[in-house]
Image (cartoon, rainbow, N blue to C red; front, side, top):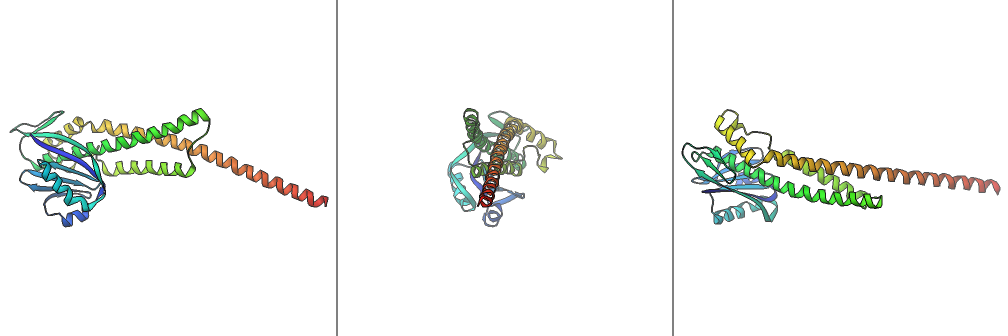
Length: 258
């Protein structure tokens, strides 16, 4: 069994700088990804959104590679979210199972598809944790609103909360290719089947929809909070205007009396 291990190692990896410095054999490059042959039948896959995947590397080799790419990482994670799946090479067999994948040979494009989908799975795990925590925090505010009839969040904090949600949504849209098939699968039936089976096995689409639905629920709640705050601010301004008018009227009345 040959391991595929994917890690979320940082917020982002500077793939442009990495391409200039890294000495491994570059097999494929995209706008935000680099696929390397590390040594015979061993591969490394780097993604701009902070993901790195390894095929058939030992623990010592992985640690060595992580040290090499660390300078290109923004906010390097000491605690890494990981996903691992085993690959077996068996002639004339292509099969995707829940715990292992069987490939007919050491085809680099097949291996790249496995590493790509494993990396997408880890990214979904990360965004699932983030959105779950944000949904819990949002629910705390809605419970307070239900019991007290008012919000326990400041206007500035609410705006930052909304900005955080929008940034997460943008990152998911920019970095995850859940519904897009790589170009190599367009004209190769075997690669297309492998890619489709991998997405189903990793349950990528359903997990993506769950995260998307959470974000929409959070956005809907935050928009309601913003409407409540805008109404409260509008009412406060109205009272200020009324008080100023009353002061002006009283002042004019006093002047006339005098």
